[in-house]
Length: 144
Image (cartoon, rainbow, N blue to C red; front, side, top):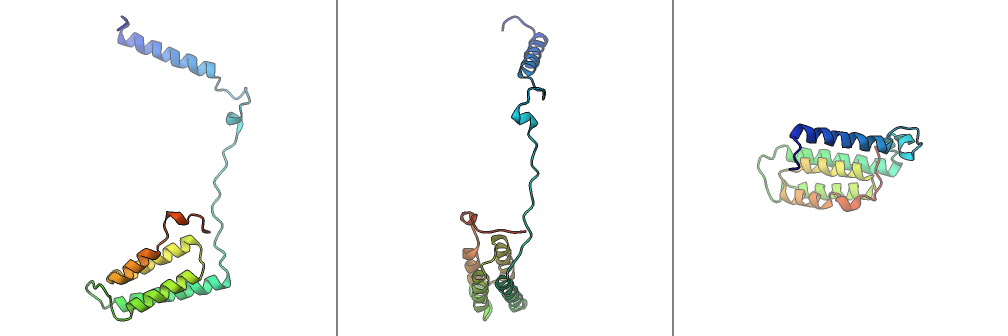
């Protein structure tokens, strides 16, 4: 080392840091743009304003989810094909939810609820998993 003891090295390091802060002029008197800029508060998203066709499609999709829950209620074990007519209702749900042109967050929530309703049907789960939005769909409209 250079012959300085540890406390002396620490004191000289603090002195250099204090000198650097003083030279930087952290005060507001310089009128720096960064020092005087106000921080903008993030605005929340606008609430959803669905048109009539979207509301109808949402109602049909929710009715399909209720049907899927009723179909799967008596089922106790996993099956690749699922309960009778479960695949048909899952397909109808995918058509109803997809044709309504819903905002992305509502569509994703519907897919999530449908996947929870068909947890014991292998084909249904795979079909819903394929329809689930991915990162590439960030350009779609969102609300809420």
